[in-house]
Image (cartoon, rainbow, N blue to C red):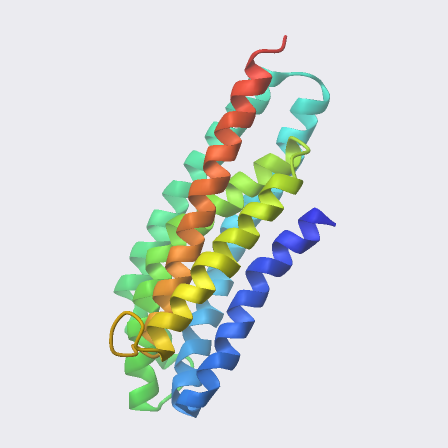
Length: 209
């Protein structure tokens, strides 16, 4: 249940953002969906590593091989960061070509290409939070990560995105760009919280034989 809720808290935010952007017109929604669709496709790679981490860390933890559990976490997260950096560079440099795969509308292409820059930015934080969450699940730690994802996405990412995108609370409404800043902030907060939690969990098992 905590794992399912953690996934729901993250995925639902992206769905809510698409609904909130509906008032800005079809072209804005289309641009948002292009950026979101491609970033979601790319996210399958770090998500796969996250699932592998859950299995490998769970196996090592079940055998009380704490050194192997720590080593698996280090290798998995390090590999995820390198992969996320490469994917981020690829998305930023190829964003114009990516949008051309989806539409021939010039305005939608330009706006989607701009939003993909934000999608490229959060590849590292998104990959890191997925890897840390996967490792924590392998350590049977799911309730605290559930609360952390709720705070990061629903109490940081979504409110910040809404206030930047559709209100004058901070600046003149930024539209879809404001929501993507909120998404980057939420994912970064999740990566920070889950990374800290994983570090604490690894320190705890280090004290046991």
